[in-house]
Length: 113
Image 1 (cartoon, helix red, strand yellow):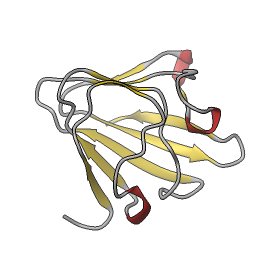
Image 2: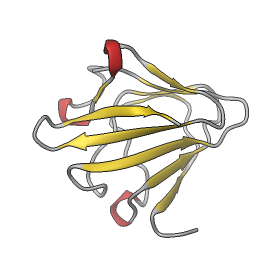
Image 3: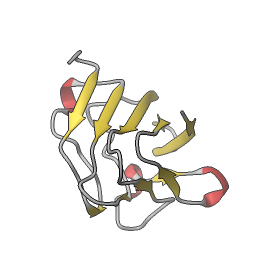
C-alpha cells in the first residue's frame, strides 16, 4: 500500500481522540473498516500535519462511520466542526474529505465523495 494511505485497524462503538496507528508516517488517505457502526468524536492531527487535507474512507460494506460535530468526548483541538452543526454519517464504502485548520484548531468537513 502506498505510504500516503493508512489502513487503520477496525473500530467500533464510540472512539474519542482517534489516533490511528501509523498516522505519524502517513498522510492523504485513512481507510478504516468499522467492525460495527462506529462514532468518532475527534481525530488527533499529529502526523497528518497542520493545514492538511485528509480523506477518510469507510471500507466496510455494511457498517457506517459517524463523525460527531464538536463532541466533548474529544479534546477541543481534535474535534470536527461539521456543516450545519450536524453529525456526518459516512455510509458503507463512502468517503469524506476533512481539513485540519491549525489556526482554528479544528477539523472541517469539505464534503463526501
